[in-house]
Amino acid sequence: MYLLTILLAYSLERTFRFTRNLHWRRIILRWQHWQISHTKLENWRQHELGYVLWALIPALGIGFLLLLFNHTLLTFIVSVAGMLSAIQAPTARHAYQRYLAATADDDEDEQERQYQRLRQASGRHESAPVEHYLLWIHLRHYFAVMIYFMLFGVTGALVYATLRDMRHSRHPHWQTVNQVIDWLPTRLMTLGMLLVGNFSAAAASWLNSIGNKPQNNFIALTKVAEKAESLTALTTVALIKRNFLLYIVFAALLTIGGWL
Image 1: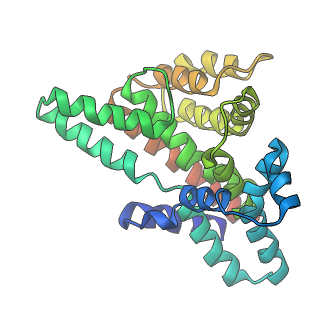
Image 2: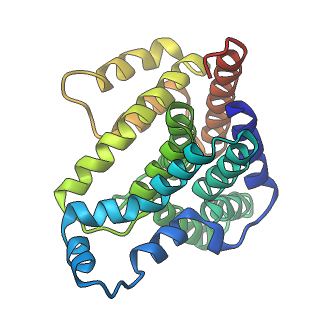
């Protein structure tokens, strides 16, 4: 069921355009801003831990209800819907298509506009090549969601998406949280790149990224990708697709073996 859920959710995301009200980010932001008249509950939400726990209630609530009903068809439908809401990145997809069109037309002004849109969609503040933004967007909106779904079901995918999308301060604690939740997906995605790209050139960078002092995930991801492939916008997307298909095959093998 895991494999079918992943394939259906990702196929629907590429085929149809859904209203923003069905994006998990929009759902979480509305939930965070929901006003409560109960004084004690409102005070609890002001604390940092309470703020996070409050944001996680929708994801955890969905998981609890699925366990309570324990119905295969219901779990499948909710899992597809949950995955679909978590992986939405229409702004980035549209900006990438417009960026390619502007490149083909040698329209530098339009290229710059779409570059800035991709940068904003990636959530990165530093200046970087467009290829790096594409890698980061794919990691956080597609690959990491799939990995956490395979590990912990739809609840895991939605908890990740909540921590990724919720509104929070720029406190150093949040940098640590994002470093932690992206660490495993980054290493798994770059491991796949070794297998579908230039293994000998990228292996040393990948091993270095899992050393005693873990690198920043964005740096680790882009370093390995640059070693595994000569990056342009098109070759980056091709590398991403090959890597994603590798993990789909892996999920299929786990399903056949009865481990997933």
